Image (cartoon, rainbow, N blue to C red; front, side, top):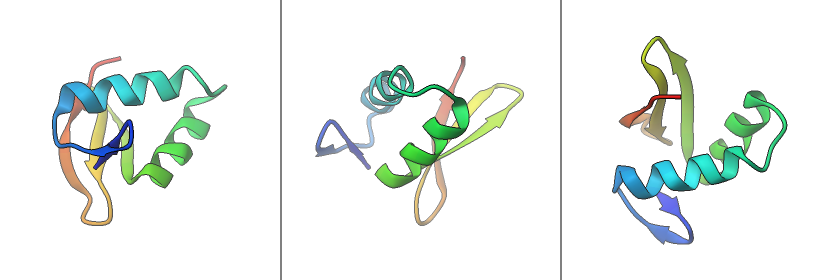
Length: 65
């Protein structure tokens, strides 16, 4: 999906984008809502935060936070 205004499937670039955006918000709920607007679905799991691409909801990877 889009990270920093370019289409990418590189998890390192997506991770950097997601963490930068996380620093801009006050809560995890707001962060998840904002990321849905960018085309990412974030879901909390035991291993961290699962990142999926919308609308297919295809899992791209997991962020360990």
